[in-house]
Image 1: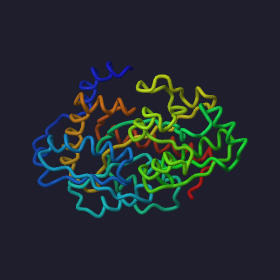
Image 2: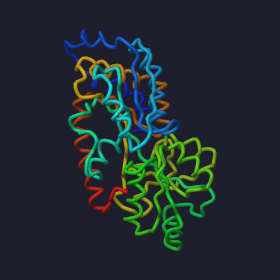
Image 3: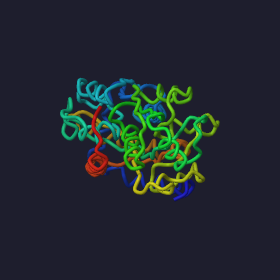
Length: 327
C-alpha cells in the first residue's frame, strides 16, 4: 500500500482498533496527574524520537502533561525497572521494544522481571524495518560489495548497535552468520552515541531504524545499502531489501509500543490506548511516521498481546538458527 492510500485508510483502521463498551466513563476519569513515558535508550534514538513525536498530542488528548524520561542501559531493562518501581496506576508507562520483550528473554538466563506477567501491553505504536547503513567512506555500494569487502578483510568491519541484545545487534549477527563474514559488534548505550561514532568513522556500519537515520541518508552522510524487510520502503523506493541483495529470509523488522506495569487498572489502559490510536490517526503524525519509514499501528491491548507472543517466537527461532549468544 502506498503512503497516500495508507493515510486515507488509517482513520478507519485505527477506529477499528479502539475498543468500544461501557468502560469509557471510568477510563475518562484517568489521568489525574502528568504521565511519564520511560524510554530505555538515550535521546536521539528511534524510540526516543517516536515517544517525543506522540507525547505533545497525547498530552492534548489526555488533558495532562506527558513527560519523556530517558533511562538508557541494559537493553531497556533499566527502563523496565523504573516502570515497575512506580505505582501501577497508569501514570507511568514505558516505550517497550522488540529487544526488551521479544529478544532478551531468549538471550538472558534470568530477567530482572517477567516480561509476560509483569509488563502489560497497552498498544503497539509502530512497526519499522531496519536499514543497513554504512559510513560514506566505506568502499561498499551494496550488500554484495559489503560481503566481499568483509571476506577480504576479516575482523576489520565493526558494526554498532544501541546495546547488547537489541534488535540492531541481532540483525548484525544475523548478517554475520548468514553471509559467513567476520564482523565485530560494538555496543553503545543508545542509538545517538552509536550514530555519532558511525558518522565519525569509529565504526563502519549499523542496522538502525529509519526514524533516527533517514536525515543522514538524505544528506549523504551515511549510505544505505538495503532494507531489512520483506518489501521496500515507500520512502526509499530505490533501496533494495537484503533478500533482494542475495541473503534470503532476512527480515528482522522491529517495533515500538506502550506498556504499563502489572496491576494497572484496565480503565487506564483502555484510555491510553484509545487516545494513542487517535494521535496516530492524525494526518500530520501518520505522515511523519511514514516519511521516516514507520507504519502507525495503534492496536488494542489484546491484539498487541497476540502480536507479542508471535514476535517472541519469531526472534527465538532467529536466535537459535543463528546460534546467537548474549555477550
